[in-house]
Image 1 (cartoon, rainbow, N blue to C red):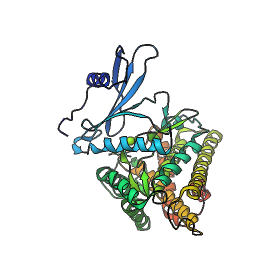
Image 2 (image 1 turned 45 degrees about the vertical axis):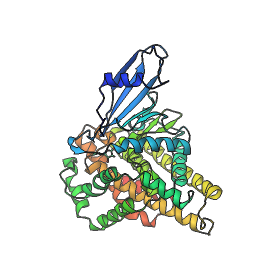
Image 3 (image 1 turned 180 degrees about the horizontal axis):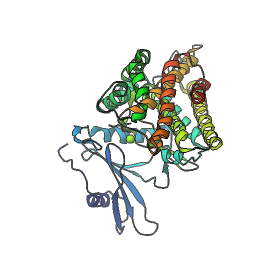
Image 4 (image 1 turned 135 degrees about the horizontal axis):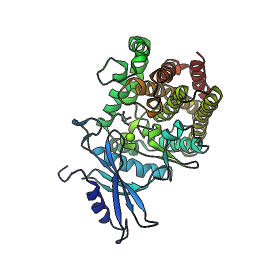
Length: 403
Ligand code: SR1
Ligand code: MG
């Protein structure tokens, strides 16, 4: 990391001018730091002339941005993110921003500007609907997960891929902040005091903690496929027609259900948040129904695409053994439910919350949404092993809402 330095807005402009063919020589470049995530700097660099183009610079800092330099964090994550974006674009074309340039020394990725897209989480709080999203994200999940797994790759090639995506420091964040700290009385937790009794019951629930321990073990030991690793609705950008997946810096080889569970968890956190955001019952139920239908469609697209890829491309000698495909998909479904449950609970109890719930200003109303999220989360974890279809996940949500 000898040549590493954090860029200023002006230095980012100068750097952009020196990337061959990125901007015309007479471009009038302006730069603005727009990062609002937990970890990195993000610069928007634009040629101010009419019809001038724009790009995004994402620079990893050698520490966690929201905490400061007391928490160092590897710059290697920029290499992982850049390589994951390039690979995802090959496996599922146009599903991610194009990478124009990567500088290992500066931990910098220069990529397509998606300013016409909106962060999906914001759109969901505004009760927007995205009719193409299930098809697009279900396809992304099926293609990236199947095509990087042992089902599709030779064992040697897959293990080389897994080695190049070894991402211990970012995995450690997930192990701590998703699976461990929220389920213990840890100083990093930050929850609404009005739900203290619900949180205490979770900490005292050994049956639940046993299941979370098993899910954490799966996250740490089961390298099924290359995951995005942090696929919440803040890592998804949307227009009414299109979907792009961003920010795969947590990419590593792990259990497929972790990525699918992340998408479902975040749709369900939004579902729970509308208990506070949308007082009109009919309007609330209509949007919540839309979210549940979206979840079912995502799974159905994922399953159909995954089965089609399996039937067409599987290299694994056991792929045609009767029952193997069904059993593989049932395991993914059960993992999906379990990981979704963990991810819902960590966003209510742990350090990193979601704006879906945080933007409910009345703490009592927020507590209603948070309690529903915690109830759904617990039931998904506890009931996952009996689940055989996506309808079972939806039934858990409906039952929790009615209670
Ligand atoms: C301390 S970082 C907390 C969270 O931010 C990222 O988006 C990941 O979800 C991580 O767990
Ligand atoms: Mg991120």
